[in-house]
Image 1 (spheres, rainbow, N blue to C red):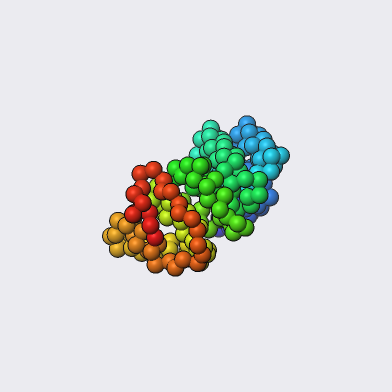
Image 2: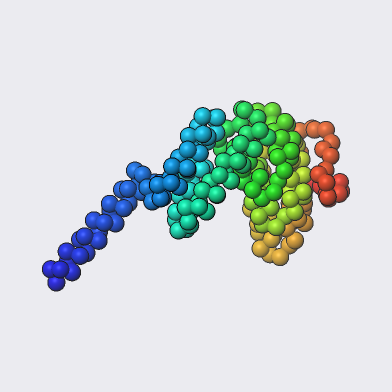
Length: 214
C-alpha cells in the first residue's frame, strides 16, 4: 500500500511539473532542431512587424496532435508565408487581429487581391470580424466567390460587426436545416439593411451580378 501511495504522489508531482513546463516553456516538447527553426521564424516575424503568436499557436497545435517535427515546421512556415501575404494585402496599418483573420481567409482560398479590395474600402473600420466570418462561411460550403462578393458588398454598405455575426449564425442554422450554403448566405444577406451609400461593386469571376446582390 505504501508503494502504491508513493507511486500516486510521484505521478501527481510529474503531472504538475509537466504543466508548469508547458506554461513556462510551451515549445519545450519540440525536438531541438524543430524548436530552433520555429523560434527563428518567430524572430523573423517580430523583426518585420508581424505577429508571432499565430506561429507559436500552430506549433502548439502540432504538439498537441503529436505531429512530427517536420510536419510542424512545414505548417508553421505556411502560416508565416500567409502572414506576410496578408500584410501585403491589407497594408502596414493592419492590426494583429486583422492579419490573423486574413491568414484564415487566405488558407480557405480567398485571393489576396480580394483582401486588398476589402482593405481599400475600410475607412477606419476594423476588418477582423468580416474576415473571420468570410473564412468560416467558405469552410461551411459557401462558394468562395459568392462569400467574397457578399461580404465585400455588406462591408461597403456599412454592415457592422454585429451584422456579420448575426449573418454567420443565421446562415449556420439554415445550412444545418438543409439549405444550400450559397443560397442561405444570399438570402440572409438581403435581410441586412443598407447603412450607407456606395458605388456599385463588380462581382468576382464566377458570380452572376444578380446572385451577388444583397
